[in-house]
Amino acid sequence: MKTTAQSRIETSESSIEELAVEQGTTRKLIESKPEVAPPNTDAIHIGDDDDTGGGGGNPSSYSTELGAEELNKRLTTDSITADTTDLFGETIDLNSGSLSFSYLDASLPCNNAIDMAVRRSFKGSRFTWASDLSMGDWQLDIPHIHTVQALSSGGWSGLWGDGKECSGNGNYGLISLQGVTYEPEQYWTGDTLHVPGKTNDKLLRNSGDGLIAPAGQYPKVTKSNWKISCIDRIENGRRIGESFVAHSPDGLTYTFSKLKRIEARPVGPLIRFNTYMMVTEIRDRFNNTVNYHYSGDNLSYILSSDGRRIDFTYQNSAHPKYVTSAIINGRQWHYHYSGSSLTSITRPDGKSWQFSMGMLGTVQPRNLHGSCTPGSAGRSFNVSITHPNGLVGTFNIRDTLHGRSNVPRQIATIKGKKDMTRCDSSLSIRSKELSGPDDK
Image (cartoon, rainbow, N blue to C red; front, top):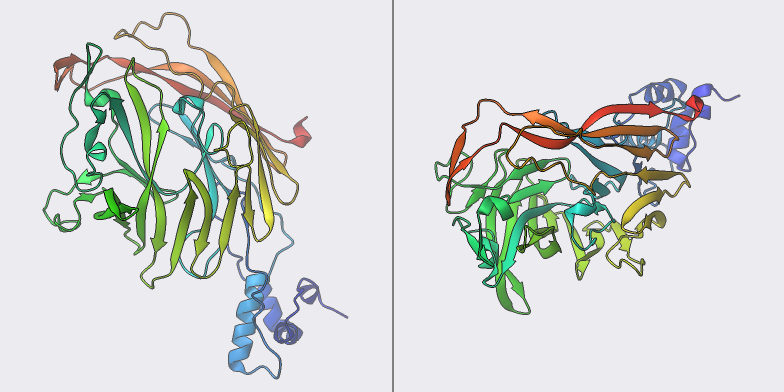
């Protein structure tokens, strides 16, 4: 007769079966705390089916410990994991009330500390002029360095246009086009290092005080103690610019060498682009690597030095840059679109996400034209997301005025003094409602 503890264990390894006979040891293992999944996710975490471990024969002290370790990896509990109120991956800016979404669809654990995962973040269709994000109004979220460039008769603006993407320290200047002069703040937002789950910081000029890193070796740093070094970017044997090498506080090194531009909304006649230097390699201090391979601007696959792999397909004839599936160990996540919007994701278990993002990402806050008079009430709309487990999140958004305090009435700019408005407008969340199948 099997005990309850023994009935929960199903494994093919002979050494683990022998270990399961020891009732006291087995109970101790089952009562140990299981590994907790990352917050804000209902992601599917995929292991290696061929990692059998264990062995035959009489278990020695070492083999018993090894069997216990392997058993602990495979243990499951019969309890239900509770969903939390942030299961939709939303983030709320407490200053402006603006709403954003980022989610981990699947992860593939490696035999090292380097992350391999499929993540997405919501950008909205207004983020791009040509609807050429990688997931409609969402973006495949991978490490990158982002800036904004303007394209004028003089070519690409700024240091990125001069081939000094990493090492340059000059200031962005005025651009004159069709009789209009544009200040840097109208077309440029700085350079941002983005590594999902770790940092989203502006790159800062190294002051040379040596507090974070020597300025000669690392011309850029971040406030979260990342150090940036520079290498030449080579294409067909010719130097075409610079790549970034970001050194993280936890010992990982990220190389950003793939240049990608997505056309942004123009400012009057001035054409702007969201410009990225995409990650191409992540390396740890033991020389384990994860490499990102591209076909044109599309991420084709991610491959680790221990053989783990994630593939992406692009089979949308109307939008060839849209991801249509992610494939891990033969299991597929399918991404479905209506026009330029991501509407659903079907997981390998048959469950699906459903998205109805309303006007979020398609409209902008009111232009106050320097006035704080509210005039007519701001528009209001709902955003709805259905979780694979059936829970529905409804977010009410309203165009809202926010006052400013303790700011100067005027600021100095390249063109002279500029008046500051006493308020601004943003699309702010007003309410969030969760409902499930039992609430209908």
